[in-house]
Image (cartoon, rainbow, N blue to C red; front, side):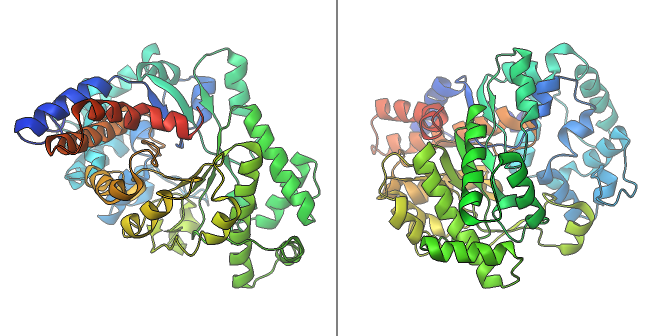
Length: 469
């Protein structure tokens, strides 16, 4: 285990870059964690119950894990992933853990391996490698620790030194778990994020019924364009009342539109009647990104756009297991042309913050860095999802910094459902950034005092500023 938890993990092998990276990392490694974009479950913090078992904590909810195992022939049912039709799946946590351990070698060279080794070593004190021979012993050790009070969600939140964490919540969510957290008196800061995909994307399952429900809970008439927009405003205000500072938009493309009010009204009417015209549905999604940006200008919510994923690429897997089961695949994404209508509307606004993410690395230097390097409203989200890795983070810095600089980026976010991996992910990001800054300083492109200042900005301050936390 020691090889992947070495003190110099991800640093240069020798000389001044190594000593600089060590010094920079020493100054940031214990900073609080700001986690402004993630997918942990607010009920964990509300109920503060023990996590059920090692498999349910570390394997079953993590698509990074089960997509790799599935690619090598392990059925999702055998990993405890629930099916939509209620057909039997493995429920024995030990059996799931054994299968995981037997196949752990598949993660060699992946960031998942880095995160999991960090979790096993630093959270559970396990130093031996995970494999078939050690699976039961490690399962028993973790299962025992999970029953302890200091391994419950709130205790781990505090142990991880999390200053604030944002969950991602659908527009129709009543935020009941956030209310329960507030009512409990616990001081941990857990805030929601407004995710309206289900009531913006006509291709989202149950879209028409979702709009009906949006009208019911907002008290607005979602049968017409003005009432529909008012419903969004009402829900955004409701989320802000629970501390939300951002919205989140997972669209297939970055395409935006800026229609006249009359044209938007007519388009909405056709969509509301169930238009099956693919061009109209695409145009509606595009218009709604611009509408959300205009609402951000009015109410101050930071807007996150992360396009370019072909969601549920396998229809048979989607029909059997539903969303978020590892079959979201990156696509080529245009930003320069696609975002122009939105940028024509709000791009020059200094008080608007729109954070762009991508799964298309070819757009870093050609499109994203030049856009963020001139439009006041734009910031670049970190290397993300498939690129949330040491090499992906290095490529991001190398391809964006010369044009966009550091201060048009927003630090790091962990984007995870796997709660125990949060410190590991932030640690990897801090190490990669410190190594990059050390290289710039060693090449005399930064002064050492500037490198130390930037290390803190990238690890902590930029995220707080960008997300208004």
